[in-house]
Length: 98
Image (tube, rainbow, N blue to C red; front, side, top):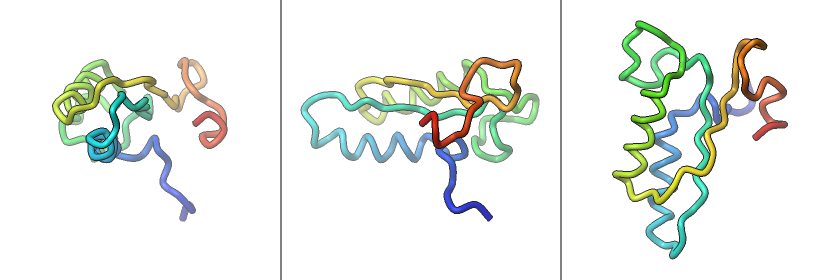
């Protein structure tokens, strides 16, 4: 059993909700970073209907729109952890690249 849950395995809507709660008390925009796996874990997002478990621009668009509706002013980074060495992303140690 792991000692922690990786940011890449966390529903980013929960992170957005935390940022949105804090954003109400900050005059400037906060730097929100989304952490996504190139292969999204099963059951993490209900809109993933089983046709593909790969992260797509649709997934990013849904999260961006969710953040916008929650009052987030900007998304600063989208960090991608790739499970395949042939894909571009953060393939090193997870805690080293966050």
